[in-house]
Image (cartoon, rainbow, N blue to C red; front, side, top):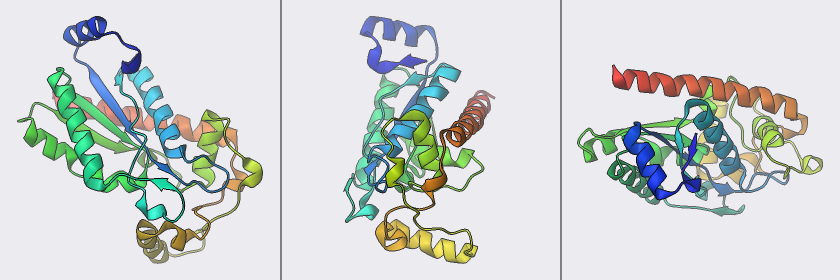
Length: 240
């Protein structure tokens, strides 16, 4: 892994000239995660995942974009960008990487609200760069067997692995969907996209009270394994 923040210009340019670099841009959010997890949770998790993937594959790791699209969490605390703003920032960053002769980029997403901003960004950048740039946007939760949650079992378990800033004594159950039909969950999901508090009441989707560090380690390992395979597949398909 090459952590771009720690690099010096001459060495970095030499490294890029010597080898075709693959860049990783992690994107997260700053928003409420119940009473027990910090507002940096999405950014913390995706930063760790991007770091481990980059270490495993030897990628160029960029600083995390810690702000995302989180307006659906109001009136709970959130610091949000507009969808168009995040899309523009990512487009500018990818274009800047291309100007530095880095032509392959993975955008690793850690927040559900960012999905609209990254939708079709690969196609748009391919057109903008006249096919010189390959961009792959991947959301980490698609690479685990467990259902995605918000400040529930999965996120809390992951945070117990990577952070000391978890207050398990304050953890409370949120919206539990185990006995709901797929249609009921789908309706709640649409409501949550508009107003997360209306859908969940306390801002938690899932049950964090049973989360453990051991479970977090298993989930994290699964994500790194599956996401790493996907990245390799993307690069193999690109070169074929």
